[in-house]
Image (cartoon, rainbow, N blue to C red; front, side):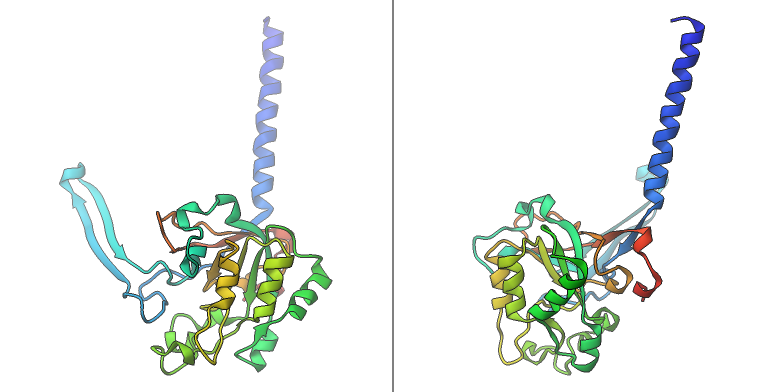
Length: 277
């Protein structure tokens, strides 16, 4: 290769690298990342019958054993089902997928945010109905395959006070809980007639029967190995459609659930002001 050829090679190679860098920069700048999770602690919300959360500082000091460097580490004990988290299908259905068995490709999908804040402002026990789902589809099209369908009731603003979130003066009595959820028929519709990856809510449960303890909404999904995510936050910061929601949960062996730092990616063009809380 003569000098001229080398020069041409380096110019072309440099242009290629610049083009790749420019494309990467442009792609990143066109995407917004929105945190959809509550902070896990110091008192993460959980059901009253689970052991309490514990956070122990093991070390926060200069460590001579580590070359005089700062060394910080902690020990935590937490329920799988506390704060923003995922329920694996094994949670309420025997012989269904546990956390380490959930396929990673099932832990993300197009965000379908069903906004019922107006209805909830008039009825705090409002349940999403098939008509709400149909209304969403009339505007945004059929729910896409592999979707993450999330109820946006505005309930995340009540966190972290258990009595306010569970909407009761007796948090030890789960039959007294009152908060938005899905109607059973809406859950069966999503499971049978839409190929969803996950169903979730910004409340502590996707299904609530105020008359008695009833897990049928959960078990209908879990029998079909469809996980659930709960206590999701900041759904007013993403559009009803056009986002991609990710559920990066701890891959716990034999786990029935796990805390999750759920987030969404949204094209910058869709981050219009009206979705901000």
